[in-house]
Image 1 (cartoon, helix red, strand yellow):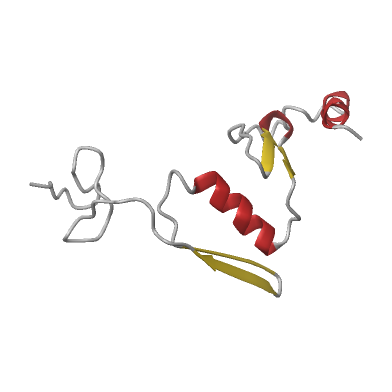
Image 2 (cartoon, rainbow, N blue to C red):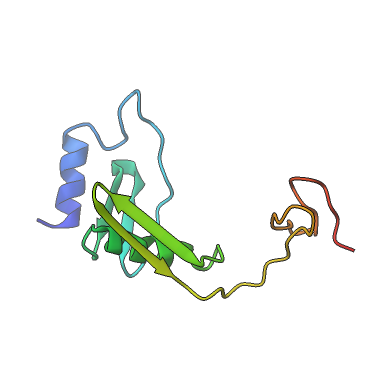
Length: 114
């Protein structure tokens, strides 16, 4: 069955835009490993949905936004972790360790970078 056919079933069943008690939607995205269809609350993956597969998908989505050094997923008795080399330089507050915002100010304690 093709993706357009699956999305069509969601529309025919009246569940494409959620239910009255579930109207929350995430962002649409498309990567090499996964594509999100937020109107249908559906993510199609090329990776098997094991804890190892989830780590690959999440890292691919967030690696350019966060300085990920370790990801761990667990599901029942299954557990997987992966460690990565830090690749982003992040200015941190010397008082509490929180990342400074774009203005050089700590959002937690108000420290300002000199």
